[in-house]
Amino acid sequence: MNALLEVVKIFDVEPFEAGDSDAFRLRLEIVCNLDTNTYEGKVYRLETYRLQPTFPQTDGKSPDWQHDALIHVSDDMFDSEMLKGKSIQEVIDKFQKMFNDIFGCKSV
Image 1 (cartoon, rainbow, N blue to C red):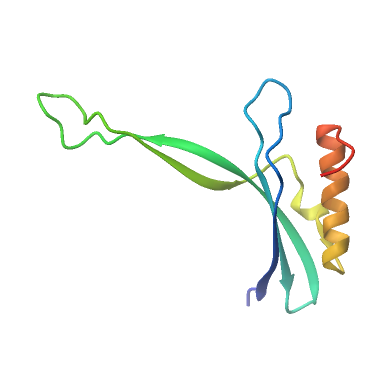
Image 2: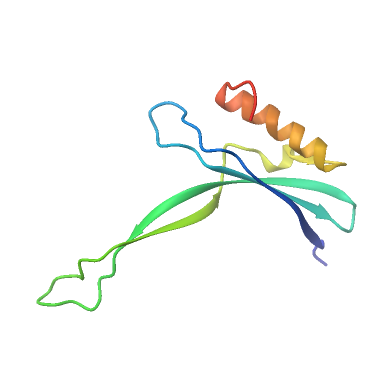
């Protein structure tokens, strides 16, 4: 049987610049594994996608309108296996250390 998980905390990191890329917008989601009473963190990055329909067409041309969609995607820079702990604070502390190591910042 799969583990029963409960989302217990969600933290959104203020957008920040890192290098020449667009601003990073990260989210830390902490869940409690109700079977083991341990906590697990998962980091997501907010991405923007531009969608444009290809149908219906007029004279072989797609419609002119576009739509920007925001979606949270799993961020591969953060190892979810390393974001496990016995308390919410332990997961937060591990996230802050990983964040500092990846981006060279002093704090989140």
